[in-house]
Image (cartoon, rainbow, N blue to C red; front, side):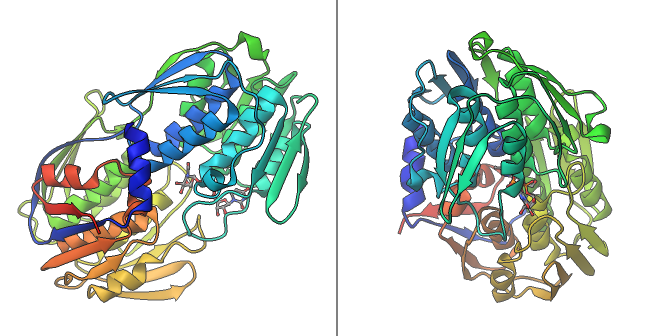
Length: 443
Ligand code: UD1
């Protein structure tokens, strides 16, 4: 089982070893999106039928979601070697989610909305995930309570129950991605109409609505959604939802990671199956840093070139923000690249409170980075980084260390890659295909 065997890697102590200093060249195909796939798979428990998903990435978080879905009574078949998953959720009987999977992955929390919508009850431990700062779920609970769920919490557990969910007007004080998705999932089968204001605009929210509508839901999400942040959901009967085939959208964060890898190591690479429109803010930034970028939206292709430019140039200031601003998930990959670019860059992290864990490891490789305060770092580009053994402490920070290793002189070993495997199905294979000297090393 492809996702299951990835699960084994999650518990082993593998490393990635690479020799830096080689320019990248060639083409890489972008995998399906982790953050789009997880809520869409969770949504399958709402549907008393069989759904088939394509382009599902082979990453450990998907294996974890499979285990969670199976624990509720869903029957899953992997279409070996095809990135296909078949999920039959005709019989969902269990409302208690096993703590060991819930604590391994924050996205498990979106099963709350889906299970409430399907069977009216859910018992779940507080979810886990990467250590990137405070990750409360008050907004998730706010949305579900507005729809009529009764919620009891203690230190570790959340119990939610609803005889009947009812449509409501829900105005989020902050456009949380997960809370928006959870609320949509619960509202699909609620009685009456739900209006969500200040919903998260991320493409992974739109993808969830798209999937649910194909399966018989009645969700209005306008062309002006980015401006309005408004979603209207007309509740439908559970039994009117039906099975559907659905292709997971490509991963904008993986695509962005490879763009920054090309900037850090230098070279000329093409991304295939790239979500071009979703990467506008990223492409604009890397152009400002001196790279040549060609995009072709019809062909889902991005070409980035650093040839003939020498080093990239840091721009003075970048801040992360909600979509379509620069994504927090690409902040660490940008930081790694900035370490070897000319001049100074200040980065302000506005989404997560503790997303600079990678700084210490980059400094050990010779980077000149200063923490200005909890949310700002200043990087001054250095001539070269030096290969070291460094530890991945979370998903995107781990990928940033791989970028740093490709840009560094000598050998870099990134340990604890179970974090990287949560989101990148084969970062080593992809970069090797682009000419990097890189391999997995099993401890
Ligand atoms: C999702 C993505 C993650 C990405 C993030 C922001 C998935 C699986 N993960 O995470 O990769 O970095 O969006 O684009 O899709 N918050 C609260 N209360 C809540 C919920 C969130 O205060 O109930 C705060 C968080 O602490 C954080 C901010 O809101 O500071 C953004 O969180 P949110 O948009 O919910 O991100 P996630 O859905 O967790």
